[in-house]
Image 1: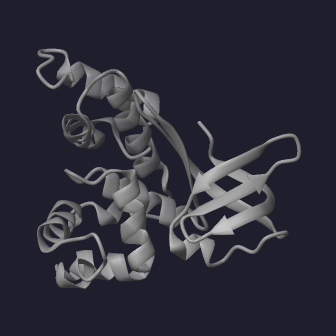
Image 2 (image 1 turned 135 degrees about the horizontal axis):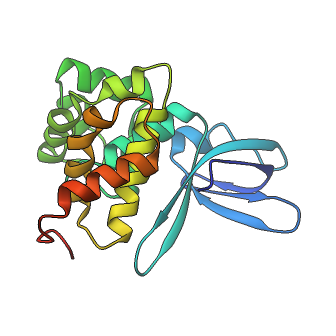
Length: 198
């Protein structure tokens, strides 16, 4: 799992950055909140998230670990893929997103281009009980949950079902559980039936 990438910014656009590592350059999808902090020629360290699908592979980059945590949290919402999660982070600050969720105000998010009222309402409703994970000093529980969910998706489970299974076992395995432990527990809970397989 790629965690952080450090190199020289060789290209930056609103939704993309190319980081030169010397022998290889990595193209990363980034939200505007991250690209606005980058300048060509500067050294940069970005928190990374590799999203692998059957037909594609994309590397996403974030200026802060908290930004990446919210990216993964947004992806757990039904109908929110990685690009739409980036759109949300481009349209509001992490603090603004946190405020909209904690106050239960979807109107703050529905003003973001590409985010309608229904999607904004779903984000607020589904994440209202989850932002505690990001607010904790340690991002480990959220990161382990995200990695376990991605692993289930790579095994063929639908993301929504995978996220539900992971959420259902996080309390059992404990806050300090590794991604492998969360994955094992989630697979055990899914083992009775494979209806959610794609």
